[in-house]
Length: 288
Image (cartoon, rainbow, N blue to C red; front, side, top):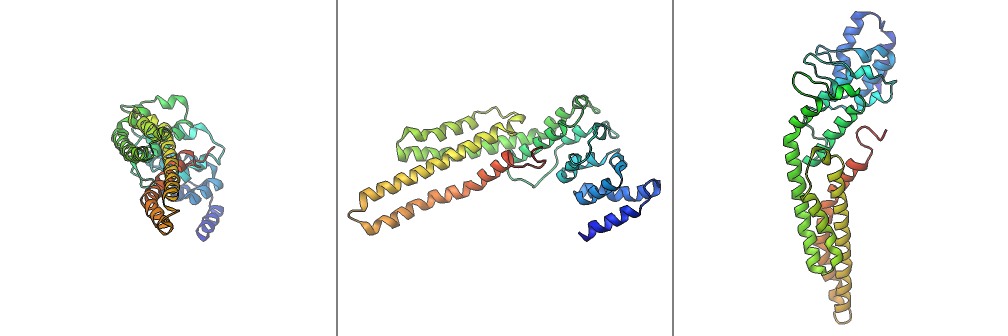
């Protein structure tokens, strides 16, 4: 809070029409955007609206830098401003527009799992694509359109995401098959069939945004439901068989039988939570 107050005091005392003052603050302005310090950037923009047109030595505006370094809080300042499309229309020294930057592969540790990472990359690309002029979507830099850049740089991540999804679906299918074997009920074949839907998907880039995460969410929910149903059936069977003659054995056997299934459910629940939050949660750009 004290740092933000210092920035406000500086902004109030600056003569913004002086090019020397602008040059002094510009370096800090772009450094803050690179590091994702949105409060600093916001105060500068509030004090001097012309700062959104500043360019660094590579002809990048503040929003180009935010996309290039995946700084969502800085990029979200577009939504709180009186947005003008020409903020995003400039090209850098090698004719990259801001959508080309959205298509670049930027290392990230925000989410775990190749499929979730691919989903996050697609969210960034779509967010920028929805803001730029349609002409920029097909604009070519020295060689490629933004979509071609995205495809080229993310082809390995797509393969890793496909492998991750298939391994997850296979592991869960084994558990679902175990449930079917134990329960002998046709109703419990649903989870297995739904996991087969993941295994046979085409795994295009767009599928990682909604289609594949949605399938995995539904599959995990049905599997948890099947596990819960199996636990109820197991407990009821033990009760009917042992309660009348071996009352003291009933509770220990039931508890021991619940342990491995419960542990599996607890281990898989974080994956379900992360997948649901990433797909249907607020998201890095909010639900605007």
